[in-house]
Image (cartoon, rainbow, N blue to C red):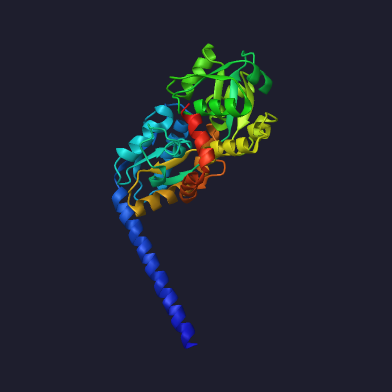
Length: 344
């Protein structure tokens, strides 16, 4: 009995100590954030699905952050998200007042030898992600392309921002593995600019439009058959596009399948948010908890749905951190092929 009493006492004492430490940590973070305004850097132009998601998040996240700071949104497009990622890593204050919404491809960029990627993705403090994504390969309705056979038999002009951007990278991947004939036109600042180019007839299509982005920014395109969806690519199929061929199902060569799985891994990261390296751990922990809480917020979910966006399989900060770390485990052979695709 005496041993049981001692054990209960020790358990109670430890629990009380943990609660005291947690309360102290919360109070310290609240004291830091109270009265401050945080900056949320969005790595795309305004009006994109990334931008809409980020601005909605900025309205709801403060109530879950200790101290309830304000949040302002700053768009920093360029180089497929590299401009924002480099800023976050090299320039942004490391005190917890800046975080960013980044593309899921970015953790791969340093590993693939992209010289413009001046960061180590494993050192970012990843906060979480709202969803996994599926890329759609689309062309405007007027394009004389109706399926995979046409993609293999004629040139299809597609738009992209930079040579290392996801649409350009996917175009080269599909050309190599599936023998498609995408021709890439570079220099468009962002996805909306490519969409406008499609509407003007300057390009035929786009090789990596997230389904969630398409229904958010051009909801009439699918409903009114203004575009044709020729392929879908990613970690899993998007049921809303019906029987559109799934790229992985078209691959027979085992090594090509490994290549495509590795290339599609960033889509599993979806739309991740991160803080710079070296932010105090208690502030990172508080932001991760706030991010997880807002993903369960009914009002936030309602607004996201009203924008035709999705919260699909959200990931915690720890899960994203683990996914990013796993990118370093790719086999040298697959990594070499990926590098050649990124740097043709």
